Length: 182
Image 1 (tube, rainbow, N blue to C red):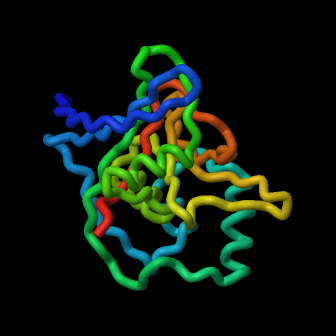
Image 2: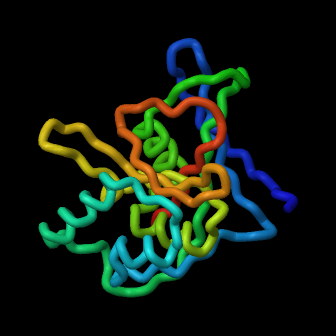
């Protein structure tokens, strides 16, 4: 499938490496999803038909339900999702924090997807590997070790895994979905 890529560069200095955040949008297949904020993450995980879900995520979702945290909205809403990717200007591996990705999205007028929105995107477009960086997508324990979930494939299997937020992402391959802020 041919993709038309719009490049919007946000340069960030990290050490000696120049990092640019690439805003990528396909013209042949817009990523339009209908988000139903009445659905729970467990319902959307079932709808996504994942081959494996990180067992720690299952425990997190149980604790969220017990705490009774409200979801963002109580209505359905259609949104167009744009994919951000981090590229190194030198072509070599480099690192950037997840917070820097969020900051660059905001600079471009976007906000990162929440976990619920990521699950909705993944259910409709199962071939997309992506990380949700929205505020309801990050869970911290009592020691302030924080993790976020990401969807991906490995050996033709669909997975939901957890990654620490203090990790640095390096190289190409991760997608950071976002929605245009109003």
